[in-house]
Amino acid sequence: MTVTEIRSSLPTMVIWMAKEAVMEGVKSYHKAQKQYDIEDQKKESGLPYNYALGHAYKDGVHVAAEILWKLFASCTIDCMEAIETVAEKKDGYCGDPDRYFDDFVLALEKRLGDPIRIRKCE
Image 1 (cartoon, rainbow, N blue to C red):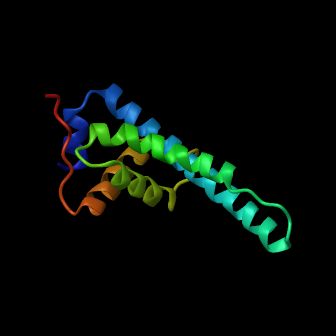
Image 2 (cartoon, one colour):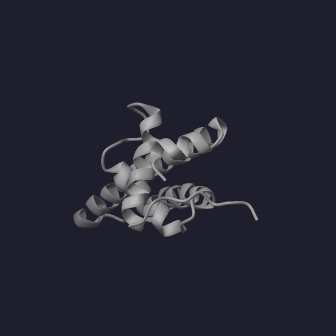
């Protein structure tokens, strides 16, 4: 399915929730990377360091992916990779919010190597 087909087949509220999950995942990714950089600098300087906070922020990406894989017929790791791909271009705060959804769908499709499918309730 194309992004346009997905948008036309899902209720507006579902698209909004998915977009928000992607944006929160992107924010968490950037917070984790920043914290990892801080801890790396501490480590290089010989100061006490602890990556726990970075890992906690990274869990935010995992939580967002857990939400998204339930909508898209994929798995958590594919959604995490797609969020990280979006995070390479966006910060989670700025830009057109609707583009986060579209960019996620395109990144997931590229990751899967197949057209996106929406999970159907059984």
